[in-house]
Length: 112
Length: 115
Figure 1: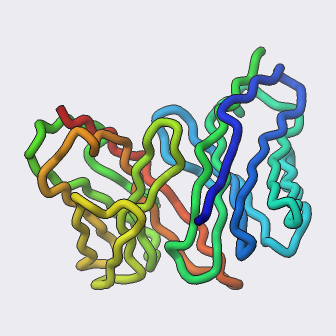
Figure 2: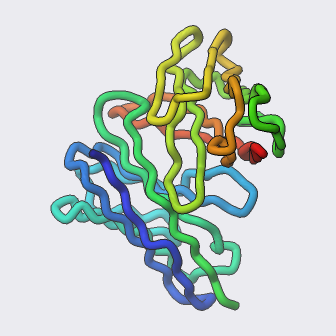
């Protein structure tokens, strides 16, 4: 079955780079997403990458995709205290709108 | 645009009670979903809809009903609440873009406790 795994927790100092990792199992992935959830709020889409790409950059965010190893990462440059949140990766497979699996989330703590 | 709105924000129910969680979107999105979020688990899909009048079951549908009489509204009904339904519930809406991508927009969530 489909499985998306993330480490539970990451702590970084303000100004450093953060790297949040995600692994998935389904080789039929089409799109992979990163969402941010702030306390008491819903998920907000940060960025996504199509499965035939290996990198996407969007301001401070860099997404790397290693399709062979089924590994996705999100790098946040110059991490700020406002980046403290839970980050979810999600994998979309072909076959319809409902074919998406979310990871368990990584809680990013930014130390001032 | 208000985006995706959910009511109530918080709810406490006793075992066996029923209630409806409301979800509305004003973006004219075709697709809508209900998820539950539990500690240490990713979001799990309860039910979804691909258009007005069309709904289907997701991964964990037992104990929940949905309907989609309009594009805007997608209520989730708990038929007879159980402690196992204590969770945070998120509604999401989406449109289909080029290449099979669906960008999902999430509501703020409803935190439900069943005692």
